Each structure stands twice: as C-alpha cells, then as structure tokens.
Image 1 (spheres, rainbow, N blue to C red):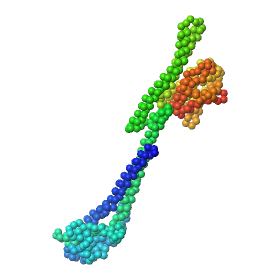
Image 2: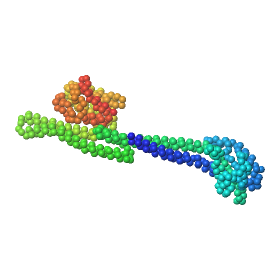
Image 3: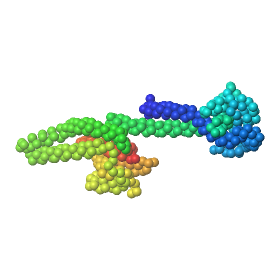
Image 4: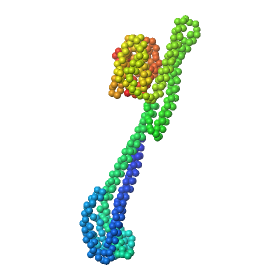
Length: 472
C-alpha cells in the first residue's frame, strides 16, 4: 500500500474516532442541557408565583380571587412567537397550588382540584423545606410524555402555608433539542469532511514530494539527467540536500575514475606515435623524411590537444544537471556565425550552402552551449561532404518544439554505425584522409541537446545524410 494512502488512513481513523467521541459526548449533553435551562426558568417562575399568591392562600380566598380566571385565560393564549426559527403558538406550562397538607387548591388544567398531591416529590419535598422537583410520565410506557414539575414554597412569616408548582412537558422542548442535534450533526460531519480533505491534501503533498525524490534518485542511479526537487525548509529540504550531496560525492568519484581510464586509453596511440617519431629524429635521415616525422609529431600533438579540449567540454556538460541561463538565442545569426568561421574551408571545397532559417526563429537556452553544439555538427558535416557538395540548414516550429535540420550531400552512413554515432569515442573514417576523429563531438552535441530538453536524430535520406535537432 502506498505511503500516502497509509498516512491518510491513519489520519482518517484519528479524525473519525475523535469526531465520533466528541459528537457523541456533545449529543448526550444536548438534551440534559436544555432541560436544565428549562428547569432553571421554572424555578424562577414558581418562586415569582409563590410571592404573588401568598396573600390569597393565607386568607383562603384563592378560589374567589382573580387568579383562576387569569390562569384560564393564560391557557388560551396563542403567543405566535418565532423562537430562532421555530414557531410557538400555545403555552405549555401547567400551574397548580396546594395548601400546607398537599391538597390541590387551584389547577390551571382544572383536573386535580381537591386531590391529595402530598405524595409527589415537588409538593412533598417543598413542604419539608427542601427543593422539590420531579419528572413524571403521563404514559408510563412512553418516555416522550415525561413532564417536569418544579415546586416553590408559599411562606407566611417563615412558615410554609402552601406550594405552587409549575410543570412543563418535555415534548414542548423536543423541537429545540432536535434542531440543536441536527445542527451539531451537520457541523460535526462538515468538520470531519474538512479534516479528511485536509488529510488527503497533506498525504498527497507528502507522498508527491517523496515520489519526486524517489524519481530523482532512480534517474541518478540509471545515469539519466534529472533536476533536483526543491523544497522550502523542513526535513524534506534536508533530505533533498543530503541526496544531492550523496549524488555529487558518488558521481564525482566514479566520473574521475572513468575519465582517467578513458583519457589514458585514448592518449596511448598519439603519445606512442610522438615518441616513435622523436626517437627516429635523433638519428641522421634525409631532410624529406625528417620533415615527415616532424609533421607526424605536430599532427599527433594537435590530436592530443583536441582530445583533451573535447574531453573537458564533454565533462563540463555531463556534470551539469540543468542550464545556467535561458535566453532567447536567434538561431539564424548563430548558424551564420558558425558558417563565417568555416568560410575558408567551405570555399576551398566549393560547397553550396543553403541557409533557410528565418531571422525570427529563436530558441530558448544557453548560447555558449548551443554555439559549441552547432559548431560540432557543422564540423562533422564538413568532414563528410564531398567537393562541390550541398550543405543545407532549415528550421520549423512543430507545436511547442523547434525542429532544426542539417542536410549534407554525403555517402550513406553504414547501417551498423547508425545506432553508435553519438557513442563516446566512436568515429567513422573521414573520406579524404581515412583517419578518425576523437569521437567526442556528437556525444557532446547529444548532451547539450538533452540539457535543452531536446533530442538528436541522425539518418540517411535521399542524396545524403540528415541530422535533426529537436529543441523544446
């Protein structure tokens, strides 16, 4: 299972369990909280009524007072209130009054007048000077029919002469409880979903960052050029820096070993020729023969110098992981500059040069490397183009890429050599001299093209050879 999915699953499990426990705890507290607030209101109401009814209960004129009519009118009222979006169109409180023995003197429902309520806790405890309250079901089998009763003592000179009880059915509170529970569920579910989305984004970002580092390490291990992922601070930046440091240390060591071996191998032949010619020059010989050996020393030393310069250029490019600058380079001007440098050689061979690249064609890249690459391509084409041959440069945009074509009228490249043309130190004999080059030119070109996100293609076409450089 991918690391990102495992991180997300652990995070989702944590969020889910936390959300469940928090929501379940809060949901369990909603109903008791509403009832506690209601009970507190009932306590205030009962105590207020106890003070209002004290004189009538003391004098025994409660039934003849205006209060029974007021209670009846109270029961018929329709408040028409809108409480936080919930309508309230009837009153729900029941009020009854008992004497000091618990006998009901007045009942707003007119059902219990004359009955003995002294056994009910709201009356029983209040008459004893304690806080009297109870919750009783109208239907013993239906918990939704429970009614809260809160009693308050009616006192005369510190003596309890009666009890007034205010009762409220819990069913009248149910809409508020359900609304609160529904909102909590929606808010809780929303927070859980947001938490999961955040966890998904965090897991994706972390796994994506690790995948980039993995891809970079894989590319480096396979010898491919890759750009080091960059991160802003934290452990990922430290890991990225450590991976890059390890790469440079390992690559540097292997690179030096490989190039020392290669350079040693390639220098053996010209050094042997120079040494042999020098030994022969120490002896007496005809001037013509002496001049031939001197020429051999000069040509072989020039070959060594060229080999070293090209190896240095190739090493510089191979060690690069990206371009140091990216500027718009006019391609036509660059090609014209290379042709101007080689003008004497072109005129001497009587070549027909066709430069068909428009002045508005540009390529984004590093000018110095592009100059070196096209100089190598031109030099290679001139080596194989016969006298009075054709050399043609062309370019066209295909989508977002630039296709640069270099054609020269030459003998077809042998089939066995086609896949090895850009291989390091592989070279074909030149038609005019039969000698091979360093075999580093096309390899250098390929490295430069790859640095620019492009591709190098070489093949035979009708009448000659075509080199195509794709640049991104």
